[in-house]
Length: 159
Image 1 (cartoon, rainbow, N blue to C red):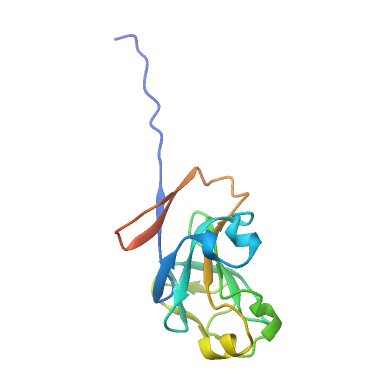
Image 2 (image 1 turned 60 degrees about the horizontal axis):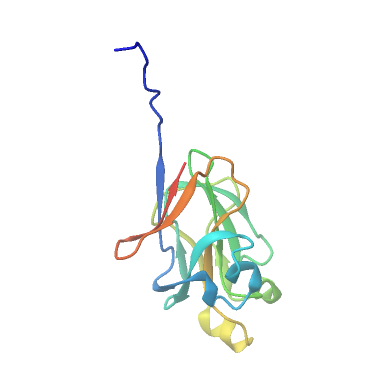
């Protein structure tokens, strides 16, 4: 009527499913303040029942801790990064009990095996195996993050 055109705002979403078989729990239960206080970012945690990390979405490995193999960053095609951090203080194991199946820069498909870890070895060392899945703070494209309950997806990232 007045010649105004509504600007179409495009919103994309990325659904994050649990990369590890186990019980999905709130980050507040992680015995590490960097995760439990959400100082690192929003997300969830998993109490693993099997020592496998699979890609929760297709993308690229933007970084992997080569020596300790306990954590990696996965990035989607739009540049949204998700950190998967196996256990608490597991860097101290110096890679013992961890096997990486990917390298930095590698393209991966959803469901692809990324890491394997020995739950018993982590526990024998007196460490927690609870695994954090985090959308790190400071990503300008991320507009909001929503927790999903009762669905296969655990988080939805709007960007």
